[in-house]
Image 1: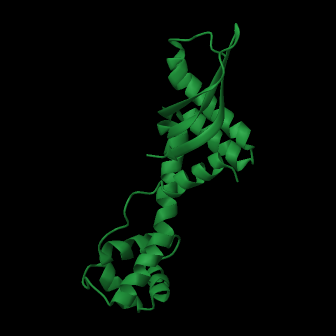
Image 2: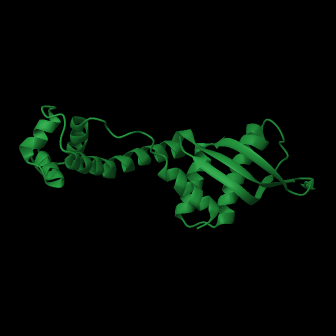
Image 3: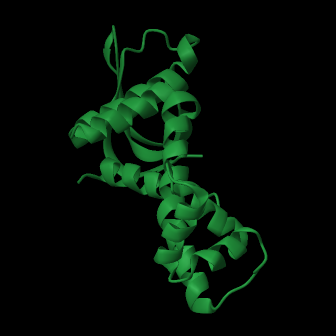
Length: 192
């Protein structure tokens, strides 16, 4: 894997910042909701099997009649919730990033430019922190999934920065055709 691909994976892994439910009852209710297509009793039975308790005890947890449990059981419940909770939150944040929110990039690399007059001076190091639009975020994750090379991923980032920063959405540097991103010595993405 390359640097950009690693950083995209890291951003996806850290995308879930929403904490799991705090109380035992809320955690049990969450686990019960994950048992889809079954009756309440069957859901309670399935959760009871996962945490090593009886169906009736799970129902009492659900109804907040029992508000605490042994540390071992609490740890089992927390582990089960985390296993199911984080993929849901992560998927929602990734979906939001590629449809509306975009992705934030912090990069220090050499930027070079091409315009109708030719290539500008030698590429020089710049450090930029910008929010790439949703279309660029979608293109990045699609290319990563398709197995794109590091150079292709860098070009997608460069194109996003060209549109957002260098041409400011078409209001300046309108003759700028291409931005090259090379010599990356730092890059971080964050999905917020």
